[in-house]
Image (cartoon, rainbow, N blue to C red):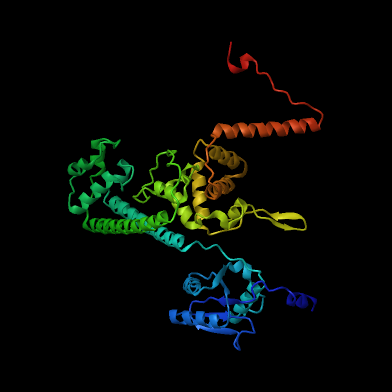
Length: 454
């Protein structure tokens, strides 16, 4: 009784709040009890019914709505309700768990409405409409590249079935030499001496080696499989190019609404060789939009930076600090504490695409002679590669946040700088421990004979 009285006296943060339980075929909507005789109403998921739901909520004087992110079923309802002027809170299902034993669709809607009315739900991050459009095109492009990669494997399998060892004599079968040879085979050319003429002068293998590799058993069923895989490969290339045109159009619109940067684009840190990147100049376009060069951050290429902007947006003010940003990415340590003891500090599991991109960049950084690369290698030796990847990805996320939020210009100090800092930190710890035991730490003189001087 005490708990129920305390809950009843809680102040209403959103008095005009509604809750919607999203389903694939219908949505249950709950409103405050003083707005209509029927406080829970069900609407079908058809477009006309969604407009009827929005008009009913307007008649009930609702101005804010909470709904769970259920699959992709929430997207049409979210967009239509936003067009009607409602402030829609898309909440994480983990934060809106229902009371055990009361699991029905109407109860879920009422529970969401009550939690939202009391201000106990947080809205998930939603980018602006233009960034959401850019994100949709980039995600579609990534799907097309995945499908294209499967057909590259199919082409290689068909070549192996004909005992054409093309992948052993060229670096990649999708390069100029490889594709010219494959197209010649599909066109009917089976002579190894003729096929080897497509060899680029930069190929390391000799003409004799390539002639031997291109001598095979050309059976019609394998030629047919190679032909179909090549056609599908070309189709996905065309579809990816169509996505590139749409992506460039969205970026052009963003450039028109942005303030031109005061300074010119700085010199690139390294030459990019990403074959899957769009054909236009992504680096210059991004610089014109956001005013800073994200590729100066170690590990971020222009295409990776574009994908990060499409996932997180360019406005970092939605997160008060970089700690909030890394926590949203699930890259910061957890704080599961009970009884004053830390039960677990593991990072939360996440399906965030931005976090996956940052982890990919962290893996590549581990092979570079940079400060972040030295940090990754030092941490991987001590705690393992998995934790080192997460920690390095968090550092990149902090740099990404500060660059977009405050216009910070990152300059890599180098691996030697990090190693010197690490050495100074270790020596400081050793000196403090020696002082606590009443000893002093002195450098050891190495005799000349120990370094090979006679």
